[in-house]
Image 1 (cartoon, rainbow, N blue to C red):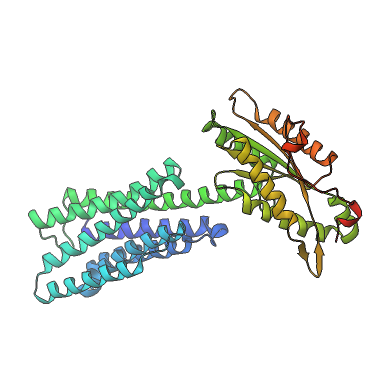
Image 2 (cartoon, rainbow, N blue to C red):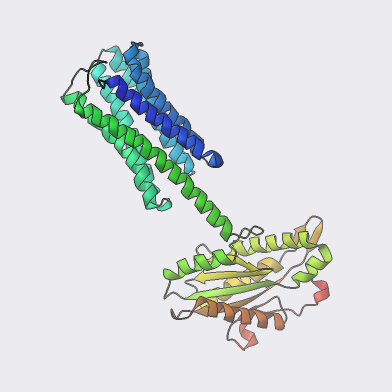
Length: 403
């Protein structure tokens, strides 16, 4: 059976529709992920464009088989860029996009009205190729957020589409050959069709990998976050601390252990729901004081931990004192209750790379124990015996702690 141009376009349409259908079926559980539905719909739009282009065999009007078909492919390419931008939660620059599209349609209409059909066709190929290269550049720009394999597969798809359409410009501009619907296409046309099929498969696989990577990242993050406070849990703290330590071996570091004073009395007097609200508010105030790049986590129960980098002892004590004051200075409002809460903090500072984080946490925990034993609502530096080096404190009466 003779392979003709219409059959090649039908094959491209079939494979593109197949990719869109696979994307739909495999992404149903991830349908709410931003950008997925757009990528599916616009893959279907490209498939429709190639299907209409193959309708030349049945002598459909040229405005359907050529003009409408190519512009559907063009629109699908532009919207693939939109899908990628949306997926990465980057605001598309619609003013520029619409301006470029408007300029394109104006030029294309002028060329068609002047019977410059070849120039109009070259313009269309150029815009489709440029759109796919634009998406490729967008992917390279956000490569830090992508695993390398995903970037390669997805980028390959957009690169192949761009390369095919730019090759079409060279072919039509310098070696124009008129091909009738029923004619056997030249080898270059067959090669381009095969590359377009590969490109659509690569784009579909790449976007599915993108979705799966995002889902895995979300699941991993949810496993490392404390559901109540939104801070890292102990597991998340140690994983991220190991990553940070690898880049900060010789930096001065500090670890802060924090504990809410008399928290059990809050639970006993007001109930665990109020206690949970207190934990959330204390976590929020701690997070407000933590510097960018430092690591804060809920260590367990009413205990929190903060790891600070590039931090001298004086700075670490200042951070701890600001946290203590942030909790003490204003009561925590829960429903109609106003609850006075304070925290005690143990601080340990070190710079020697051979010291293990776990041993320094143990020292900070011992300092926290000293802070509680010497009156609570205070900051205690590990290894310090001189009370004047600690933050000032007021003796507290436990019965007055609940407001």
